[in-house]
Image (cartoon, helix red, strand yellow):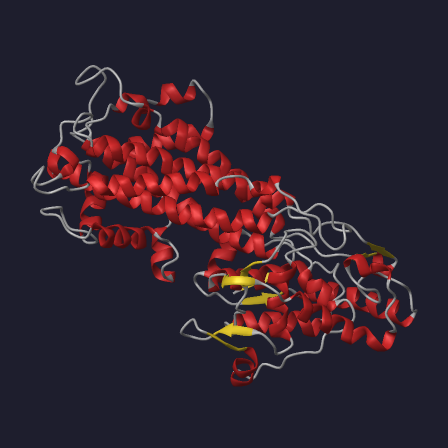
Length: 506
């Protein structure tokens, strides 16, 4: 069981909650902070002080004072009016992440919600009741208002949740079946639930889990390509990478040497050629740079996972209530845009290696890896498909964070578009993994032509593992099915079991 404190949640713990379905508990200290923060709100209400979001309207309506008798209606109207998400729902794992992250933020004790609210969120998480949350509709500032409003609906017995088959059903039916009792939101609580960056961060965390595995997989697949093309291993010599000094580059080179140790297919410089093309020779430099970006992304995500991002924030027992802007998603917007570029580049260089595997002018293998060149096309059109995906990624990699459209009558005049960046990062990851699946299929075939008995011991294990997923190309077939099978095999989120086994262990 994972204890949530509001300040100590790690990526590894979140993986266990999301993928292994580990349950959560709330620390006693954090619960006391929640209680104390709520007492401060109750005192503000009793003293009839004017505080944004407690007894005022929202956004441009912040100057409208709300009568105490209408405080509950204010919160209810807020959730209902802001639940205007659009499009397909986030994957269920993202919805679960959103709930965990929103709860963790409330536990910091700066939000003024009641203990009963955080207990209800914890109960929903532990009983696996996950809101159906449309993906589109957030500007990524003032928080992820629309997505989080759909999350908040479930706490009041409205909206939709996923059933066990992944279908959207009325939350009231599921809550009743699981003996979960919805609540009536009190002062500040609706705003505390929807002011935050948890949609972009939740999708971002899931993105990172997939991108990390994709980056590790890209290395052994590239190593298999090296064998298929009899690449020059000297380029991975530690002296080369120590001379430059980037830790991530050195790490990639070391892992490439480990994958290729014992190979009788790789060559020394001058043995067959003096040097390889960049897509082989520069694997540590290019992949290492992507790792640098992913390390940056992880750092920012782990900060935001433990951040107070709603508004206003309550300090010093209610003596200090400040309207600020922690809901602004700019740090995560930048991180997601950076991730988009990093993952897109892993696909770009992979596609170039695919070309080297299938182009008879660039290797000594059968043309397009075909068992009967001319009669059978072999992997010819797989390279087309990869080229299409990397081209699409180039459009998706355009930074969302450079855009901003004012909202709320220009009161909210600069926004992050961080949730758009996070969603586009997910799309790039899906495309990139399919490009790597194509390289994997081609590399397996090329290595087979060169001689499976000559493959390095570590890569021979991978070759046999993947041959259980897709067979050797002995004749043309519907390669779309092969690509998807390998894509699924490489996807760490397919199931809890496969996810746990998929993560790289050096």
